[in-house]
Image (cartoon, rainbow, N blue to C red; front, side, top):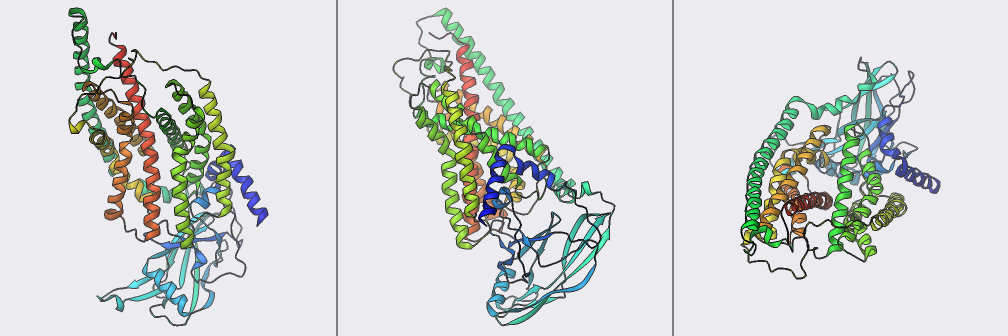
Amino acid sequence: MGIKKAMDLVAALAAVFGLCYGIAGVAADASDHRYKAGEAVPLYANKVGPFHNPSETYRYFDLPFCIPEHVKEKSEALGEVLNGDRLVDAPYKLDFRVDLDSKVVCLKKLKGEDVAQFRSAVLKDYYFQMYYDDLPIWGFIGKVDREGKTDENEYKYYLYRHIHFEVLYNSDRVIEINAHTDPNALADVTKDREIEVEFLYSVKWKETSTPFENRMDKYSQTSSLPHHLEIHWFSIINSCVTVLLLTGFLATILMRVLKNDFVKYAHDEESAEDQEETGWKYIHGDVFRFPKHKSLFSACVGSGTQLFALAIFIFILALVGVFYPYNRGALFTALVVIYALTSGIAGYTSTSFYFQLEGTNWVRNLLMTGCLFCGPLFLTFCFLNTVAIVYSATAALPFGTILVILLIWTLVTSPLLVLGGIAGKNSKAEFQAPCRTTKYPREIPPLPWYRGTIPQMAMAGFLPFSAIYIELYYIFASVWGHRIYTIYSILFIVFIILLIVTAFITVALTYFQLAAEDHEWWWRSFLCGGSTGLFIYGYCLYYYHARSDMSGFMQTSFFFGYMACICYGFFLLLGAIGFRAALLFVRHIYRSIKCE
């Protein structure tokens, strides 16, 4: 086992430099799966778990099924382990083009506790998942007979004992596999008593003309069905119309108001030099005063910029076809590797901006940048991994995998972060401020309640969220359910719309803030830009209670724990976008007027 772990370690580190797991996953299904008649085709049992709790999965043989004499575990890539996959040899033997009729797997004597375990699993709608020649197989392990019964104590619980495999082949390759359970071959597990169950399986081979290259289309086309596509396009059109109307409306007002401001200020300069200034020009000596907690602010901007780069790289991989359905763990591998490789962006952006803000303690700034996103994520992971260990679920990462991730963080993420920080420190970039900042800050006049930070965040987050909420349902149903999502082009369009709306609404609110002579816009622009992340987390509450059937402490903690990390990531990403847009706008308007 020590050698195996060492090999896994080497392979994982190789993935960091070559993205071998993520990209090799693309070729995994395209490799040469050619078989001769009677040749053994690999069949792996993966996991079992409650259908409505996607995070709560267990090893296949945690349930008392027929166990082969030699249970051999399949070596797995980093992403597969993160995905909760634990592949072992299945008890069924499906040789290429060999039909079988009611072959006995084993005669299993189930004790009372085994029967109770199966009954509990049937009650929770447990499903099993297997992989045959890298093609997924799903099925339920049993059924509850509720027909004509109102009292739960009268329900009958049955275990399926006969699985029928139907395999389609083209020449010497496997194209498709389906598993059906025989509704007549049942074992009654209603009462806790010792029973004997004969587990059976059948295999039927059929020829098909579907080419090997198209065998995964069956899975990717489920999200591209006409009625699904109509909803997606309706979502995009709805978002675009909303965005165009509102941004057009705001742009017209903003341009007209700004034009009037420029004319007014130019007229004031010509007519009366001593006339008191009002509005946003009045605070030109304070608008570029650096924000409080500049180290934290720079770290937020740096982390947000890194997450933006991560999102763009993930979209590129998705659009070129890396994340096809059931490419086990490819997304998780890509997230880990690309996050590690983009840490230099965070270090450079954060430190260079920190020096522009005349910061001095750049080492503390760099440490803060490294821990800002990873810190909460690590604490959340520690808690949730402990929960998974208590439940003995496959979501619990083995020590070797945790060590691999820590090594990636130590050997790749941290050095790149430091190198980026040193490059940022040596960039010697100066902050470009069109106006000189006065020695003492002006007092901000009393403002109505709706101009406070929280009401402004609520206004800023609502519009971008309204542009994405329809698409959010499909993403949630894919991540926290069994729906397949493959329309990445539409998702990319929605993401671009989200960025545009976030930037525009932040600019508009920044203008109104400056017009009210409130010059503390730095943190406000970041918080307003990122507030969409809070709306997404609010949607999580709605989705959990109204759109899903998730239940139990483990699933609930996994859902809200990891969604909190994802929404926090969106908060940083969109906050950085909002601030950058506001900074460009503020520089532009103050460059256009004559500042004393």
